[in-house]
View 1 (tube, one colour):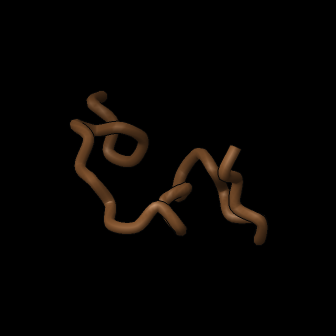
View 2 (spheres, one colour):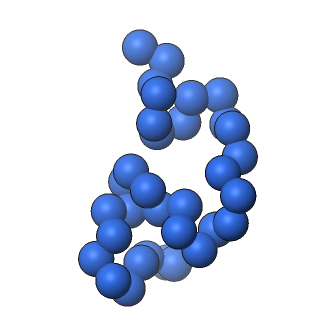
Length: 33
């Protein structure tokens, strides 16, 4: 798994190396609730 090495939180901002943030219809950040 591409887990962050430096202790980043994977659940919230796993978008460190993945590049630009793609808006995937409310995935983890602003959820649909």
